[in-house]
Length: 109
Image 1 (spheres, rainbow, N blue to C red):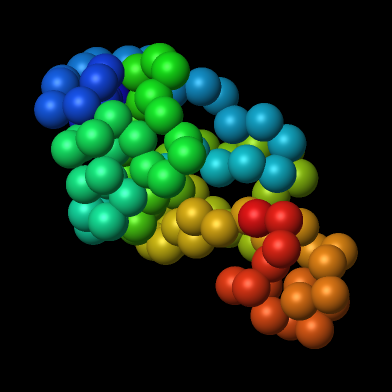
Image 2 (tube, rainbow, N blue to C red):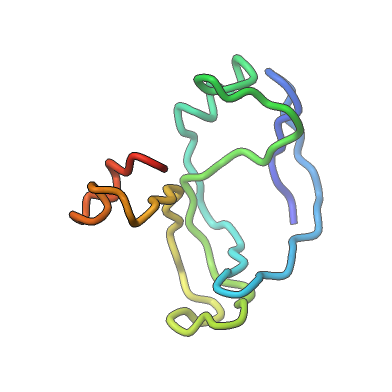
């Protein structure tokens, strides 16, 4: 597979890599489309976003969709070839907002 990897501000490289085998509850997605987010631009222009700074090369892109290419153990609601969209947020599920179904306001994301 190929990915756009940022090494430092204004240093993007298209690199080949071998994807990891999905672990339990995970899937491997072959990307079909992707967007450029404001945070991607901050990483490109400034080498970071807010207080977060690049410490090692990082694959950019988190607004993506694609097809399922491999399933980890326990994945039962998806099948090979399914078209999926990725939600980049990782709400905690336990804070006051998450308990009320307002995951986009999670205090611990």
